[in-house]
Image (cartoon, rainbow, N blue to C red; front, side, top):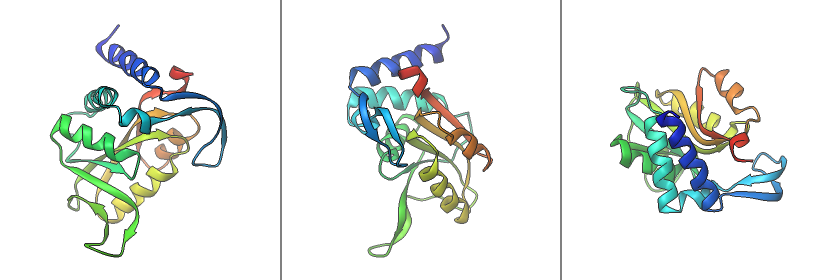
Length: 178
């Protein structure tokens, strides 16, 4: 078993142990119905599980491939923060919309035009919310070609992101968990 396989197995065990994998009748953010739910917010609020996620995600970032790590509000923020701490890469938070009060803007943290941003996401289904963030980052001059997700539900996100020239790197896939 390779080191990445061992890390993946640790992550799967941690997700199950903290109760992030649930079975029943659920409605997803996309509106789809599902017989299972991956509660990454439960995992990302558990320090031990979050540490495992951060280590696996940090190991998935190719050397010199990123200037900044980014998280899409809300689910990607704790994950991106933990990865920032693990890698010592600066953090940028991408809001779902522009804030029109305070300092305003859609981004918290700094990145410059031309900065390479690795986005961290909690769960991807179709990839809709992370695709919106990629559009906003690109409009601001940032470069995004990789999204690391804790769990890919294997329902189109990989193909949708590929159509934008972005690679989806799942730490685990739903088929690994259910």
